[in-house]
Length: 216
Image (cartoon, rainbow, N blue to C red; front, side, top):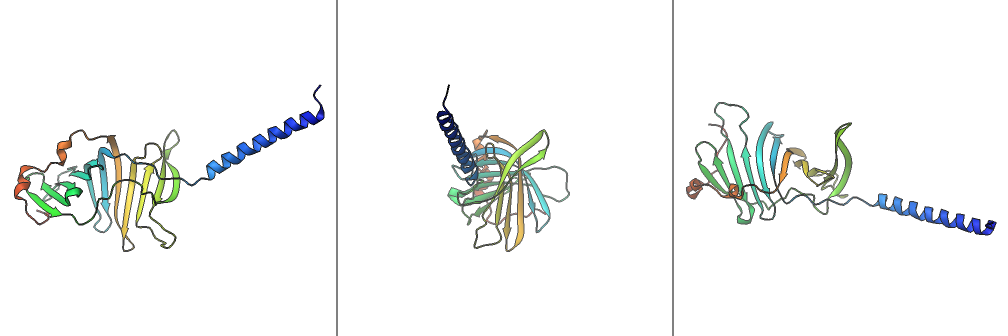
């Protein structure tokens, strides 16, 4: 027969182990989330909404973070009289952007003054929220991050990324307390299927220095 002292000792040990386990579990849960690592190369589609002009731009995108390259091809969803559609090739290491009119292949070469801004979550970002997109049986968990800091009440960037695989879902930028652009991402696939999309066409050898406008 096991003595009461031994039984109590075993019971105390079990309670102690259980308490330590619960403490470690709660400690793990209490750890603040850290930004996930977004894919470095992908292709997909985007919709960018300019809140100042009310204009939506749908495009297919090729994204190459290691080489700091971005190619945007505007989609022609419907016929719009006197409307131009463009292809944009951003080469940030060369600090230059090429704008190509899709029909005539006319090309503009514009110097880039802004630095490369990858589609990812910066390490110093502030965790805002975690939630599901969709409904029962068809949900994706995402996290929302921003550049909000304690000394500044309003954020200028908010990014929503999937918890699994860290794909971008939406990014919103603000400037001077007004929303400038919101971009939604979808139909993403990893890798670059055709690296030649980052090579400007031959018409860009005699490119004009002024940016072309959308109206005819």
